Length: 60
Image 1 (cartoon, rainbow, N blue to C red):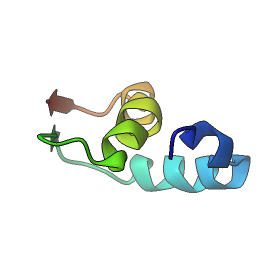
Image 2 (image 1 turned 120 degrees about the horizontal axis):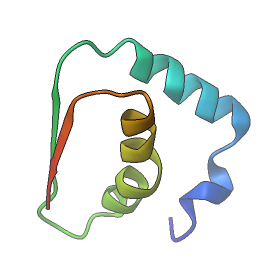
Image 3 (image 1 turned 90 degrees about the vertical axis):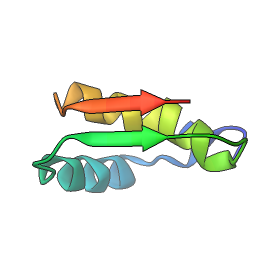
Image 4 (image 1 turned 90 degrees about the horizontal axis):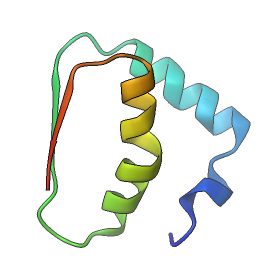
């Protein structure tokens, strides 16, 4: 998981963007540890949510 972008194929990106488009509520993401998911969220998911103009709050 040191390079999540390497595994983020065009197909997976399209799938993720389609899922994000369906979100209709504000989101709160809380991170309190060093889990590998934190890197994926900060490098891939959160930017995708922001580019889709979703209301999001992130606390670390």
